[in-house]
Length: 282
Ligand code: MN3
Image (tube, rainbow, N blue to C red; front, side):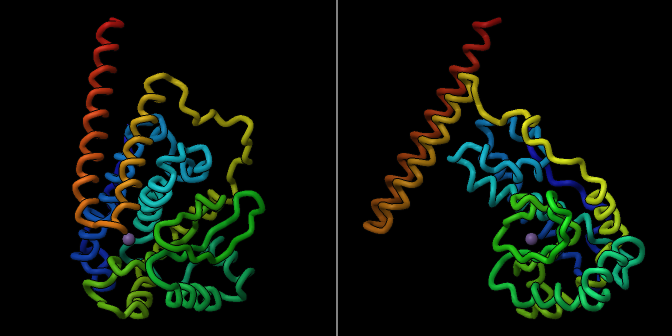
């Protein structure tokens, strides 16, 4: 099993003129795909991790092997955030929400305009790359606007996302250059409120968390332990190269190539041994 980028529900140009086709294609087919490819590469030694929905994996980061935890947080977060983003966008959208989501926003923020102003402000002022979310806490049911850096996901913070806005420059730079405020104004016109409303309904009906009943993510089979050692060796090789780079960039390049090649060789050998073991077992 491996994670996959979901197809868009609409054509690349369906969100014109607000989000242009070029940005949508690059964002979905290249940026999002790269997060998924890198995530799958990181979890290759632990293929059972991909059996979990990505939000569940991010919600259990403390159980993910330490050697790949940062990669899962970053690239798994990138995958979860983009799936979420495509889900809440749509053509013939925007405007003022109706239904339960409208009631929830009015109750908490006084009016939709009040919510929109706070959310836009958080997105406009968010420093650097990151995301702004409207999310609910799974344990308390509290709804809040949250800004997170890089590809951090609300799922890693025990929250369920209802609305999200990508404020990485790759989300808008082709059309809006450095004018994030113009992008944010345009983005409100493609928010599919029916999808946000559905997410709120799902959130209100969420099952209660029962941590004791969760299956363990721990890796126990000899093959997985061996795979873990490979991941550690690969990571150690990279870390060694990184610390050495401060001393001598040129020498580091050669060493990194060597340690990387050794790690790959070890991996290939281990895989061959596993294949042989399976053949012997038959
Ligand atoms: Mn993005």
